[in-house]
Length: 104
Image (spheres, rainbow, N blue to C red):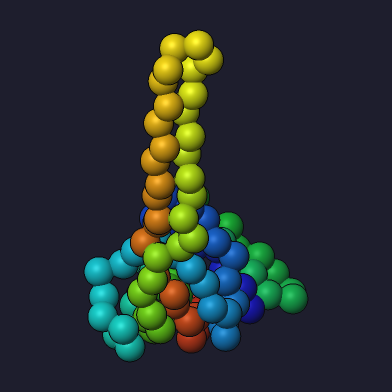
């Protein structure tokens, strides 16, 4: 069984046992998390598509860890003007493990 969930402005296709990096969640490591914005649920036989969400469907997960992604370096340069800028960014993320997909 799989589901398509929405969290952090992005959509993810998940199945039980998957590990997933999502935008940072306000939950401690080891805490349970429930994703209630389920857009689609499917298995080998049938697919249920929500309009826009599947009613009473949930995806249960646990928070494994929090972390920061690799550094992305942004450089700006304008020729002949003496203009140089260098910026860096590291995005926070939460690693979750999907436990169960509950259809409504």
